[in-house]
Image (cartoon, rainbow, N blue to C red; front, top):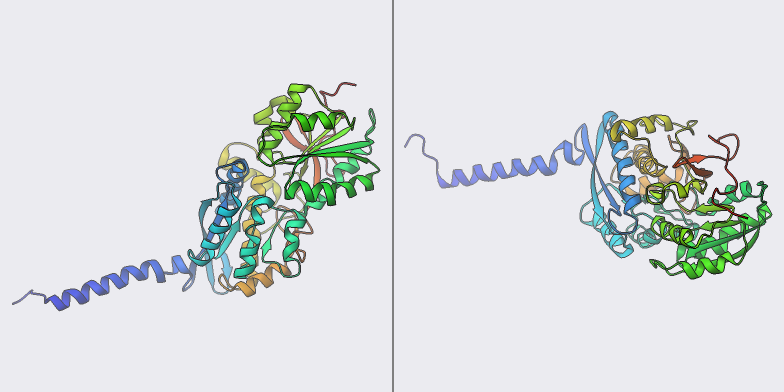
Length: 416
């Protein structure tokens, strides 16, 4: 009969339609990089909840700005031009969860790029994963030398921030030059974890010795505690002119609130990170020093995607109607720029050997800083300058050739 279709024909047509539909998902240039265009799959394993959520949320802002800029131009590899598509996974500020999500991103999700975790206490669990899978990846923000030392000579995890051993070097150098009062002794309060142990044992004492400052003592507290009073009481008896609060934002806020409660303020106070401190502590944070790795005024380096630091700051303000509060978002953007460049240099989005070789060979700059990875995977060309909270914003104050404002000394709440 005219117009009739046999059952066998229907099955064939259905099969052909299914195959065509599958091809649109699996084989299409817009997804897997076939033909002249393609997509690079980026897995961002980060902390959107838990103790590091403040950092994770700001890092994602920076990543999104980088994706806007990179995708507008495309990542050119051979005769193909790629865009980057991001999927974000919340590790809940848990090292074990982060490591499992990182492994899943590589083995099941087949991500081409993996940004693996935030904070050295989290990333320490993912470095063995990268090593075992021999898959090059970057951390959002981790820089403790001792944590990265286990991959020395054969890195697969790369960190764009400078080594943590640089963290307090210039701050100690600056503090040694202060008068009224002079800084002769320093103390540290820190958690008894990788951050605290490596810093208090290996890095901070060397910085103080080079600056001619005596280490008066270190007080440890258990990670994730909310009790800092006893440690601060013991530190106050040391009569040190400089106190370094070497911990992450949630603990910094807790320590500082305890200092406010007991009225203990030495002439120089240094914190490990700036994120959300003014929002949480108000004017009390003004006069406190913090290491800084980026500032819009540090505009001597650039890249082809974002431009200079001032260009990034302008893009941030255009997107969020506010200036970048600190360096964290810029750090997130920097990671994606470096990763894209490594793939361009490797000539591949899915050859881990070539991409890892490209990471090791990088010697250049981005809008964020100079970039050259050491044999442990940390950026040996990263910068670390002293900033100080002034009018609620972390402002570069040292050395003189980069400072935006002069340092205020002593801390405004200090009483002789």
